[in-house]
Amino acid sequence: MNELRYIPSVGQILQLEQAKDLESEIGHRFLVDILRMVLNDIRLDVKNHTPIPDQMEILDRAKRILNGFFANGLISVINATGVILHTNLGRAPLCQSAIIAMQHASESYSNLEFNLAGGKRGDRVIHIEKLLTKLTKAESALVVNNNAAAVLLILSALAKRKRVIISRTQLIEIGGGFRIPEVMQQSGAKLVGIGTTNRVHLTDYESALQEPAAMILVAHHSNFRIIGFSSEPSLTEVAQLAHKYKIPLIHDLGSGALLDTAQYGLAHEPTVQESLIAGVDLTCFSGDKLLGGPQAGVVVGRSMLMDRIKKHPLARSLRADKLCLAGLSATLWHYLREDAASEIPVWQMISMSVDDIRAKAKKWSKELGVGEIVQGNSMVGGGSLPGESLPTYLFSIKINRAAQLLKKLRQQPVPIIARIESDRVVFDPRTVFSSQENIFISEMKSVFNS
Image (cartoon, rainbow, N blue to C red; front, side, top):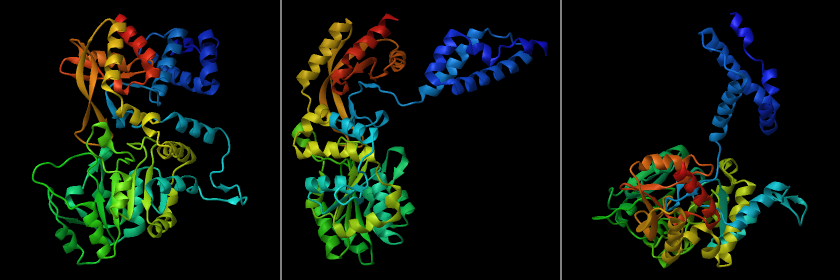
């Protein structure tokens, strides 16, 4: 078709000033590839008698395709939902010392696996193991890439083709479809469920131990709660029984609390230290939940068992990288210095006073000239403290099309994530950082003025 000869070439479009600016941002080769994609589509359209767009329209199409590429990347958002450990928004934000430590570890070489004293190859675990054992009083420690990996590694190293006893009250599923029974199956362990969905007795454990077993696994109810006619033996009782039969007790603690949540008006979340004091042989937990660090799975406990785990082939596949180790180490230092509540964002938000929250909400309402202040609740989230909430004050806007407002807020340069209660859009100051407030106000004004 003669019309095809009038379609601009890639070279012609690249001569546009706007194209040159775009080329300096994304590079020559990438822009050329995108333009070729657009021009191929235009050729097909022209064959179907669609008019040829001008050069600026072709460049605009290329920009829209590029925006699609970048829209799927990780960007910073403002979490105004009041959910502190919001799994969909990346869980625990990091403290400044962790951010700095990760930057230092990434911008140059490091002694990740190099012994500076001896000048030979070292062990990457040693950088953080001393911190973990000091904090928890455990004999040994290991860090892998998340807690699901920690559970898989423990079962694979200690219980492959062997019986593992677990209460049916603990056959849990967490986010993303991660199920304890399926992980046990992947590890090669043989699940032995005991008790019922609401009750398990110590005698159920003892009956199951009449046949040889590799371990007892206890999974903490970190993301749900059984109420009503229910019961479980204490961790100490199960530990004593396990040791009577000379098998280890493994505790999947999940949330990784190192501080007592009860002192902040929440229900008590079992701590790592309490787990070990109860007689547990190995405890595993997350680094990016109540601990407040980067994504990681931490295992602490007896050296004899930890040595077997560290030597298992999966340990190398699941090991944490230098950035994780640097960030987690810096986070743990705050617990050793006993300033975690003031320095780690998760604990800063949990411990924030309602008076400070109310003052922030009033400030927003005054600056924006809309909304009202109402009482509400913040959630810990992230599979921690199910059903527990903290009193808060919400900046509330009554609007007919609440969902449409939420959509506009998500489309801002720094997306604002809020929630709907009844017919109101509400914003919880507890989870909005002070450093984000100017951006929050500016973007809110932009949305209301558009």
